[in-house]
Image (cartoon, rainbow, N blue to C red; front, side):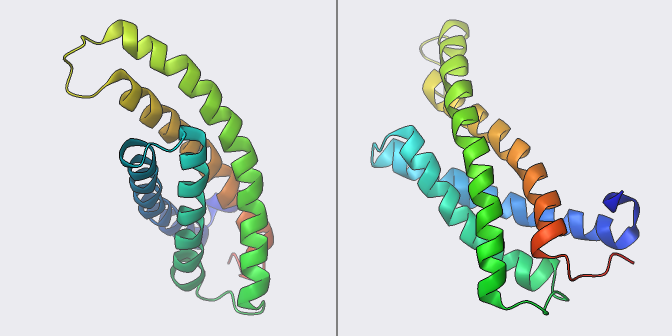
Length: 153
């Protein structure tokens, strides 16, 4: 298994940190677009995903996998983006399903004067869940394809 080796554990840890930074980009962009600019939440989710992918590629290329240099930047970004598009295909219907399920639950559970709206909480819980699922896909797929030139030691 990939994560049984010390270097791979370090890479996963770095990948997770990059993912956390990407999540800040993702959540920030999502909330800006949906709450401030009133874009559709699914559209906002796709745009925020793309911003996070670009952020994550740069961090992963230069920090998580600095020893991955047998492939050109253009090859790696295409591979990284292809994996992330599959991640987006996993994320988007998952987000839409979770959003439609969680918002009504929060509307029933929370008082109307609660600090955060049921919609806000439902959107963000749905997005967080989708991000966690896709992060696992992204790590393993990128390690096995995009960054397969790195020795696992």
